Every structure is written in C-alpha cells, then in structure tokens.
Image 1 (cartoon, rainbow, N blue to C red):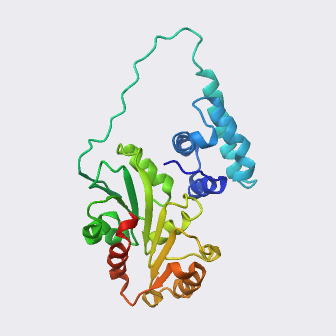
Image 2 (image 1 turned 135 degrees about the vertical axis):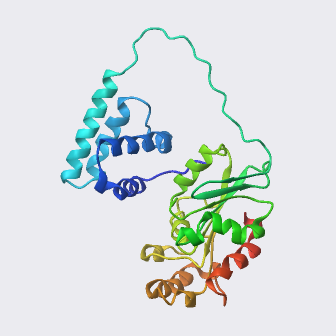
Image 3 (image 1 turned 90 degrees about the vertical axis):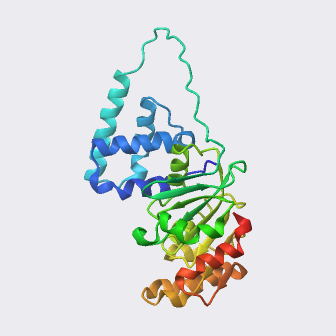
Length: 281
C-alpha cells in the first residue's frame, strides 16, 4: 500500500541529515526520492529528477550555506545526467527479471532493527508494531519476544522506533519481498507511540491505529476524535517524564471514548492491548 507523502514529510527526512550535506549525502537523498517518493513526486530516472528537486529547494531549505551547497550538488548531478543520456541507437530488448515472490510459507525474518513474522501468508495483510526506547531493551526483537505470543496467526513486522515512518517500513517490506502486503494496522508502544501518532491522517481511515501507553508530543494534542484510533494508557507510568504525563490525559480527552485508561504497569499494557484488539490486526 503506497501512502501519499507531503512536502513537510520530505523536508523532515532531509532536515534530519542537514548538518552532513555533501554530494554523497545528496546521492542518498536522490535515491530515496526515486525509490520511495518516485511515483508520488513524479521522479523518473533522468535529469528531470534533479530539476524537480531543484525547483523545490526554496520551499525545503532556508537561504543559507547549506542551500548553496545543495544547489551545487544538484547542478553537478544534473550535468552528469545530461552527459550520460542513452544514444538513440536501437537497443535490443532485454528480458525482464522476474520479481522474486514470497514463498507463501510461514516465515520469520530477523534483521538488525526489525523482525517480520509471517504466520498467515495467504492473507497478504500485515500489522506494524513499533517498540520503545531504548531499542536494546524495547526494540523490534524484544517486542516480538515479549508479546509475539499474543499475535499468533497474524502477519506482523516488529520494528525499532528508529524506523520511524510508514515509508521506511514499506521500504523494508519491499526489500524482503512483501511489498504486495497491505498494512492494515499500526501500533506504537512507548516511544514508538510517536511514530503511530504521526500516521494519523496519513493512513486511510480503515487502517487501525493503536497507541499503547504512548509517548506524546505537543502537536498530537490537536488530534480530535479520529474514528480509527484507540489509545490505552496509564499516565501514572510517566512520572519520570512529567511533560508526557501531563499530555496523556489531554490527548485522552480529545480521543473521547477511544481512549481507555488502565491501572497497569507500563510493560503490561501491550499484552492487554493485543488481547483486547487482536481482531483488528
């Protein structure tokens, strides 16, 4: 499932790396633009890629040293693209490589920042579960280990929160051969809750979004009464983070009946949530 990207989301990805802008960095951003945003931003595989992004610089960057640096990288890339355009010589048709399809079997794929558990390959729907901070204790592998038993029979990608956007998750699924799987639900626990909050309004309204005792930003307090979102929380678990503790009741009020306070420790809330909403995955 391809999600519509906004310029602000593209800016966020670029700004994260802004201090390290150089030509190599720009190649990486351009690659992201082609593969991740290509169909949505109209990026192809020629100099128009560069021209498009160059037109957007004024919107994406302030007028400073970095802007000039990026402009030079863009101009150089554009010139290189023009010089390497294919000749008009008739080319022999090449055989299209057959895309490798998933095996159709139950499978577990474990990588550094995520675990993909395929328990129902015929269904071709998958849930996203973002873990908390630190990832060494509450990342994708740990979420699978601690709570995977409550999601048996489902297809799930358990991810570290550092894979913070739905676009990054889709890229992982594509790499592993599951890009045809539809993301039908997303869940964020603790710090991963920020990621889940950020998908509200970005995902179709038939995608279920679960906020599990979530970390919550000030910007999330403007979200009111989304029909596809449920939050289960206990603000008393956030005593060490008074700002989040203060925000959670406000967020709960905005979510209305879709916010449920429980008298449970932080680490026990995912179990309760998955048991109650198993059918949403």
